Amino acid sequence: MNFSGIIIGVIAFLCIGIFHPIVIKCQYHFTDKVWPVFLVCGILCLAASLIVGHDIVSAGLAVIGFSSLWSIGELKEQKRRTERGWFPKNPKHHL
Image (tube, rainbow, N blue to C red; front, side, top):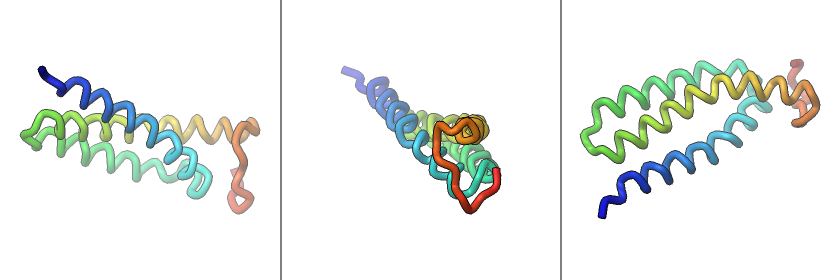
C-alpha cells in the first residue's frame, strides 16, 4: 500500500488548521504589514521543495510554501473582518 497521498493530505489539512490562527494572531499583533514575512517564508519553502529529494518532504514544503503565500491575502481579509467587528481590534494599533 502507498500512504504517500494520505500523508500529504494530512500535512495539507494541518497546514490549513495551523495557518488560520497564525494569520489571526499576526494581524492582531502586527497588522497586515507583516505580509513580507509570509512572502519570504513561502518563497523559501517552495525553493526548498524543489531541492529536497524525498517526495513527501518536498510536497510538505510546497504545501507550507503555498499556505504562506495564501496567507498574504488572508491577512488583508482578516483586516476587513476586524474592521467589520467580527474579530477584536488591537487597541494599540490604528487600523
